[in-house]
Length: 358
Length: 176
Image 1: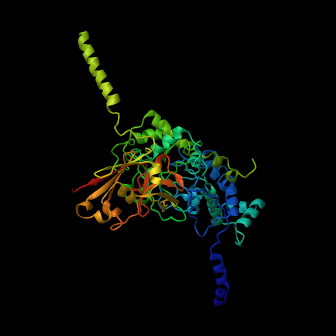
Image 2: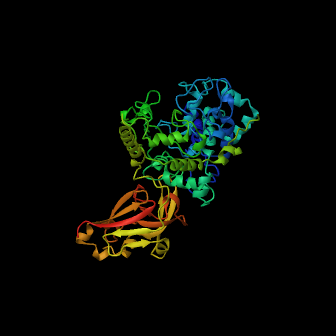
Image 3: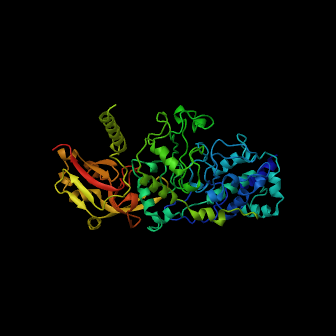
């Protein structure tokens, strides 16, 4: 027994040794901090590439009908255009699919789970979740054997996890998926060219006026949608313990289950109806809006905030949702500003596209 | 009903409509333009100033690297607030004693945002806080919603006193 332990200990130490940080190039422009990446899943080009194949692979669902890309379509900034997501078996989610663009900087994932801070952990929810069924995988199903028997995956897994004796594990699948998701960076919108490169011709005068309105204290849009990623739910390598903010925007009173916000997890009545402020990057592509897709257009969203929410008396409503007056031109200017955050490169970039032959 | 009466009624209705349509036009209609090209130093001060970019360029200048909450780092450049106040004749240094210590500066932004700084925290013999009237960010003139002037408080943990689109520095003496 002891002899066995002496023999096995070095092997265990080898297995527990963290992966070495690979030479992944982020190529981030000025203004974008390096994202936080968990120490046990350093970025590598090989993992990102494997993750891309998995992301678009419908074998990752119970009936071969859905993949991650079903709800996260590149052309829609990795959303699906639906009010709420629909899983492989046709079951509806209670909330809309969130954009994966710049998800590497997300302090928390999904609309309202303060504990969901890791993309690796989050990937398990659509894969194995039962309420609702999204991809509908089950332990012991044919998914891992299918990967193992595919020569293309054998090569991809070998490059991504060269030191692993058994590469075909769910842990490695979620590490690769998370790496691919972290690689989806949007930093080259017209607004970025205007703001960071000082190219005055990159955006319209209306968008420039709209930017000033966005940062105006009476509107206070920037208070929840601030920073380089236009959300207060942003972390980075240097600052990944930042407190996470959630907001009740006065959509309902009361908020009915299952869409009760972070109250679902904290059980604090003051948290009822509090959701994450999503990034506004590419927001013109991600309609319909709010956690339940209940507002079809950006104009509708501005009208919602201008009115101070749908319900003036919600006790948990964020004090910032107090309403404001906006001229028709101001409304158009704000829309022009929001549209200047659309990054055509991220929705056409072949590095993020479906690698499988059609 | 006589015509005169119905005309009277219509007039009342028209007056109500006009009041609703225009009477509520908010005084605080959000400003869609960035701040003015000059910074006014006003109030109870010997030498009120109207400073342009070239005036600030000719004054003592300093830089500060400011980490933002999201992890980005930005370098601002401008004139120390105490230098601006000194030029306007504010009681700083040896003059900052007694009643003068009950003085503050009200920093006002183009969109109505306001923040207060006391002379005590600005003066080198007291708080000696580094507060900069910035006109450049990463080497380029401030523009859009930031500029052309803003305050930067590099040692504040939160950013809320770093007033953007700075328009006026109003000096107020509480005791004379």
